[in-house]
Image (tube, rainbow, N blue to C red; front, side, top):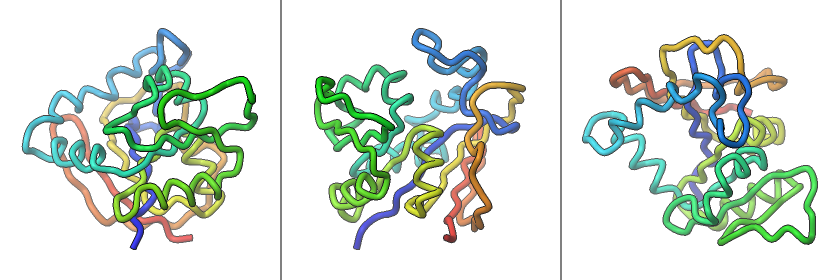
Length: 187
């Protein structure tokens, strides 16, 4: 049995995953850092600690190219040496990604390889572009949204240009300044 491909994404109440003007040196955009205050509680035994532990127990990662680059390519290791599958529109043969990272232009191929690498563990997804591509290709199984009660007003939206999609709420874990919501995607 293989684990699910699951998006893990922190989002403002108005649907933004980064504030305006996200770029190198300001990776979360203006005001976007507020979205991640809940990580201050990741080492406790509360809901945020549980969610963080689950995320770091994943067996592979799929990321969008923009997220990969803004994160400094994670130095080639997102967590515990898991394989990193980076979705991109173009692969430059001279660009060798670090560590276990590999570039993919085919969403289905990236999903299949990530599932195989993860085995029975979940595959973590990072990045709005990767989430959108996987959802459109019918490869995203679950969505875990860490909903933060803040309105950013502008920035990078998580679900621009996707849908319709049917979701089933399967878990909700409230914690300080965040509500962790998990949905199963029905394709």
